[in-house]
Amino acid sequence: QVQLQESGPGLVKPTETLSLICTVSGGSISSGGTFWSWIRLRPGKGLEWIGYVYHSGTTKYNPSLKSRVTISMDTSKNQLSLDLKSVTDADTALYFCARDVEHTWFDPWGQGIKVIVSS
Amino acid sequence: QTLLTQPPSVSGAPGQRVTMSCNGTTSSIGAGFDVHWYQHFPGAAPRLLIYRNSNRPSGVPDRFSGSRSGSSASLAITGLQAEDEAHYYCQSYDDSLSSYVFGPGTEVTVL
Image (cartoon, rainbow over all chains, first blue to last red; front, side, top):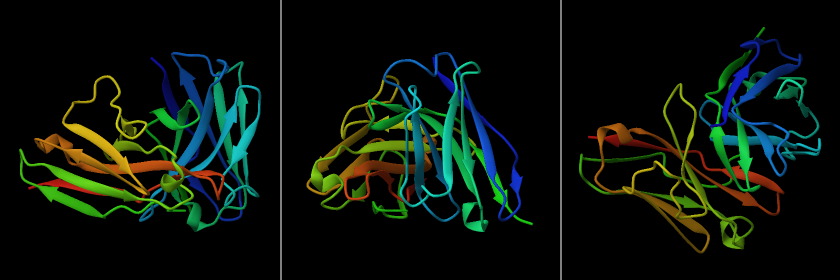
């Protein structure tokens, strides 16, 4: 059974880069045909898809965040990572990683990590 | 960005049936993209509840059902239980944005 766990700093200063790691267990991150996504839940807002990475290294990002986002994977550690640069308080959110099933829905998800942007 | 609309809250007594809507656009649900639903308890991982409009993953009670029509979808909970108190999110794809999209979520309260 695949499980995901997010990790990283819970506090980031404005203008800095938010960096998170998602560790996958119970399955290989490089399994053929598997996409891995980052999604966030901002206070008072709905969920927002940030982007995905494919085992080949191919990525796709939400156009609204594309200029600030980098998603990558480390197959040797079975991890994917998220870098979001030039953060503002609008990036304060609960960040999740999730497996992208058949390129349409997300299952399973990690339990999320709360990140606050504040000086 | 929130490009699917959902009611902020619905409530019902134990045992009742509640429904919640998910309204999209002609470039998302109306374009034929499937709708998926998630249940989320604070502090826990969101759980896939319904995929491809009306399919339940293994382990999801048949009290939960989904449907899609036109540019909208809905989730129904029959025989409402106290443990169903959670936030429910719909998700689809928007072709004009080339992005997955979610609704803002509906909070279910059991009276």
